[in-house]
View (spheres, rainbow, N blue to C red):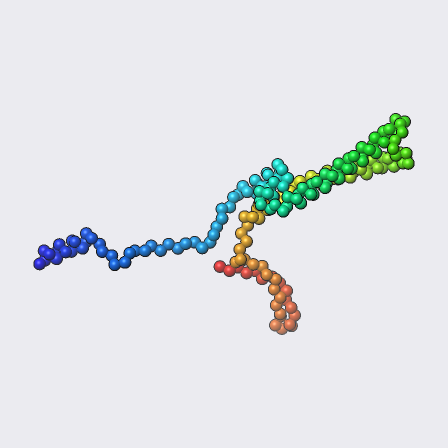
Length: 181
């Protein structure tokens, strides 16, 4: 009888019987993270430097492209117009010094020189403004690409608050910074 008990015991050791299957619980992370590309701002700035507005298209801010071209186009228009008028008054002054008839017979020499200086200054200012719009285009693409990677979460909030002082009943104005876990 003991012989059969040993055989039965060895039989049980060889074949393991399980009443329930073993389940392994794996906790899934509920936080959704996105990949942060550290070169994205540099790419956006590079694209805007090559072609104005291309960095905004790279950042998928298509509504900014007409603003970029409108600003740069307007300042380039004023540059071209002021340059044309500057050359017109300068050529008239040169013709007058050479003894030829010019189209501004109603102006004296000092007025022709003043008009040249005015249009030259406006031309140079228009070129400067065009350059500033070009640089602003690059900076906008770079900053926008940086801010796209910024984590804007509902857990962090800065809310204006107005409380009442318990003793004097005067309003206390301030901000409340809330962070929830």
